[in-house]
Every structure is written in structure tokens, then in C-alpha cells.
Image 1 (cartoon, one colour):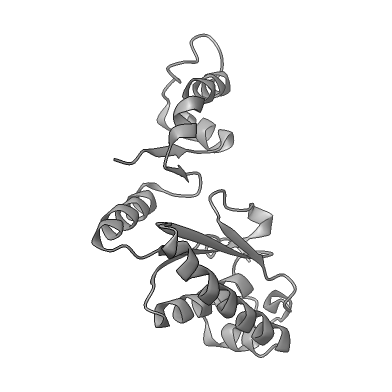
Image 2: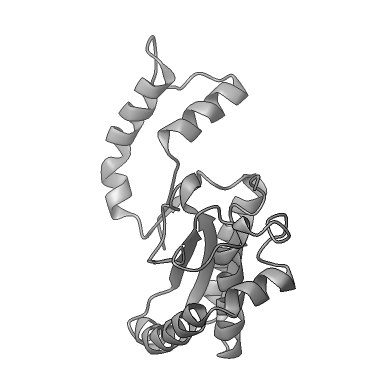
Length: 204
């Protein structure tokens, strides 16, 4: 038996209550945020006992279903480590549930190239722009080596899931390219990999 604890940040919870037009059951005569804070306090012990804490702030209902399905169904199919890769933009906030975080803002930004700005990191021209940088080649070589060393140790210790975040400024170019390359590398090692480009749909 495993305990899964779902949560979200205050801003998202307030918006969800507003959208559904439902009062918070603990708010009584107070505001929604008062009810949320009381709820956090009452559930704090349960949260501490959770085997996995999942922040749903950046998921819509279908994404949440996919994440939970992937984690539990595939966890039961094998004893291998399930790896999740997330690209994101720092200006939209750091994902909450990361185990490892890598900042690729040191790479030249395609966003400042007029012809490249409208494209995303999934376009071959952006991928070529990013990977042509000597710093990117060295970074990827070291990142691959680091994870090739680390993943078997995590598996040996019985870790079930590993979430890796790759961040750049806007989450549309550099981080997306690096996540795609990292995904290919890990899959070539026979690892189970899921990926999500959180901020790909954000305006450039």
C-alpha cells in the first residue's frame, strides 16, 4: 500500500474554487484562503507520512490522469526507475516536485535571433543552434555521464521515480532541446522515460 498526497499552491487553489464557484468547506465565514490554510494545517501529519507528494498546480485534469497512470501502472510492470523529464521557463516558476534541476541559461538564446524566435526547441533549426555550441556539447557529455552513473545507484536503492527539470528563461527553446536530447540518451539505455514541455505553449 502506498499513500499519494495531492496538493497545489495557494494561488491555483483559490482560482479553482473561484472557477467552480464552490465555498471551501473549512472557510465558514472566512475567505477561501483561510480555509486552504486551515486544511494544510489539518493535513500536515498525513502529508508527512505520504510515500509520494504530487503538486498538481501545473496539471490540467487530463495531464494529472496521465501522470498518475504512468507512475502506478508502469511501476507495477517492472522494478526499473521511472524517469520524468520536464522543460520549463524560470520566468514562470520552478516546478515543485523535482529531484534534480539543471539550469541551461548559460547557453546562447535563440530567442534573440529574429528567424529563430517563433520556433520552439522541437524544431530541427533550434536543436542545431543549441547543439552547435561547444558549451552545449560539453554539458551534454557531462550530464549523460552523470546520469549513467547515478541512475543504476538509484535503482539499486529501490527508488521508483526520478524527476529531472531542465530550465531556461522562457521554457520554449534551450530547455526543450536539451530535454529531447536527454530523453533520447536515456531511452537508448533502455530506461522508461516520460517527458513534458511545461511552458512550450507560453507566448514567446
